Amino acid sequence: MTAPEAVATASARLQALESTLNSIVRGKPDVVRLSVVCLLARGHLLIEDVPGVGKTTLAHALARSLDCSFHRLQCTSDMLPGDILGVTVFNARTGEFEFKRGPIFTNLLLADEINRTTPKTQSALLEAMNEHQITIDGVTYPMAEPFMVIATQNPVEHHGTYPLPESQMDRFLMRIRVGYPDTASEREIVRAARPATAPDVRPVLRPAELLDIQRAVTSIRVDDALLDYILAIVEATRRHEQLALGVSPRGAQGLYRAAQAMALVEGRDYVLPDDIKRLAVPVFAHRVVLNQRTTLITRSTEVSERILNEILKQIEVPL
Image (cartoon, rainbow, N blue to C red):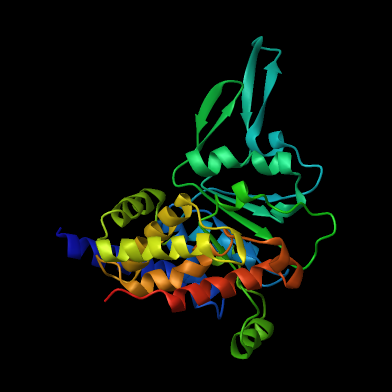
């Protein structure tokens, strides 16, 4: 099979995956597309939105569509790192210590309301998210492959929450918002005899097939001019007067991989400038840190996205 044929085949499978997800998460094709791109780029997803808009449904449907294992954590303030990673216990029958694996040993982990856990517990995810492994009592355990963390948080309710630190935010490839459905989609949701649920979903891709597609993403061509375009955006965030901290090199790598994944989903073996422009805000906005004066004026989520959009308008797009 030639490279163009392989891309076309992968794109067709991914279109089927998106179609399945859109039948569950109605009226949100852009959210579904970004979720699939994040998955293909081997990234982790942070969904920031109010309750009841389909965040959990999206995560569960994605797991069912891929026929992969799924665990959901309802994060609380009394949750301990061992509740996520697992614990070492003494087996009286064998006289030996055994490691009991926690819910993180799964293909897709949903950390619901992640900002309700303490910083100590949040940090338990760091090694797993970045290295795809964890170390307990000096022993390293690899994660299942594929492995993806989808975390949610409510941007409105702040009582009893612990804001994610910059090091944790930087581990997420994207931050997206689901938003309310349009009127037509909401009418379908309300009229339905019962809501569409993840158990209704039949697998579209197997984990082994997904791993093959993830490897194919790295073969998508990115011209040097487009790489320079990414770096120009990154540099602009570091020089912006309203930002105390710009995008990290990890963020630049993330946009590069996400653009490759977007091209593959759309059936191309090359990246376009529009791929980068479309992905820059969801990949970069949560990584920048506003200076203190800007933070006092307005909410950080909206202003960071506005700054990124302004930067995109100012930087010349390569032809």
